[in-house]
Length: 233
Image (cartoon, rainbow, N blue to C red):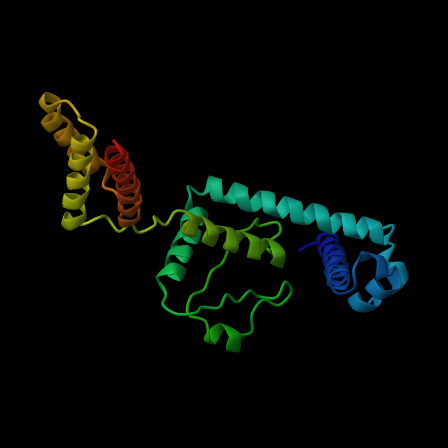
């Protein structure tokens, strides 16, 4: 390694150190309450050294925001370019979460140090979201967003279990429909064909128990109203 290359790497390391220190302070105190002097102390360098790389704390903050946006873009791009490998990995993780019984906990590593070995030891599943090689660190809030969104998608596409009506409900429903045809004086030559058609429609629809009770409620009230009118006559 040449002298210039080594110096270049040292400068980049100091610059990244300033960014990491500023990121922590911005997160802890908020942008307004952080000063360049505080960033310098956190990075363990002089205040003047900070100005060799950035003109102000606003520039540092802008750099962090742009880096985070670029990182999210690279994560999405990585997922596409790798032939769904990242997407499939997140889908598999979400599948395992929903297969688990009881309560589970999601543990995210620190932005600077990740997880300690003793913390990793108590975890059952490890997940690493692919990132850009030029900026391998993923902002914690973005990591949480990606994982939780993957879980949301998995939950959103879980088909709800339907309890279809049984044979007894089918029989009762067909009987009520036949009685309705009788009470409205439906043409006798069309009655049998209409009963069969109704039975086939219900067979294709496969109503749930809730839908069955709703239909029965409508038919029951309709029959009751017809009989009351017939009684008045």
